[in-house]
Amino acid sequence: MQKPHRFLIDRVSSYAEEGAAYVRRRRHRSRSFARVWRDGGAIASFDRDSAAGSGLFEAAEALLADTQQDARSG
Image (cartoon, rainbow, N blue to C red; front, side, top):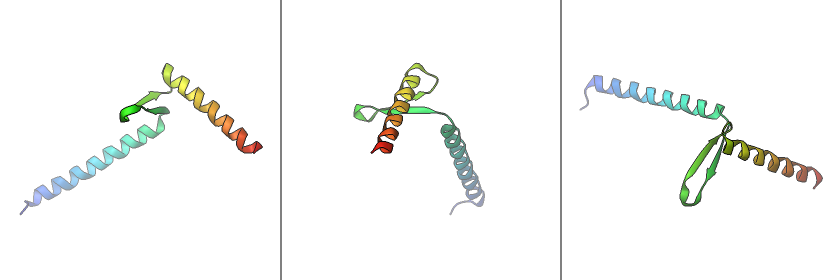
């Protein structure tokens, strides 16, 4: 049988982990970034402020603008 104080410590630890994960996700969502999947399953993330990220964002914006124009004309 588990000691009563262990149950409380486990419960508080669980809440703390959930809270930390929430803050991490929120911070992650508020930043603009581009994610690239590579062969073999590797994933690379690029901040918008980096040279590679800036190029990726420009290419994505151009691609989205083209697809929106195609949707309007089609």
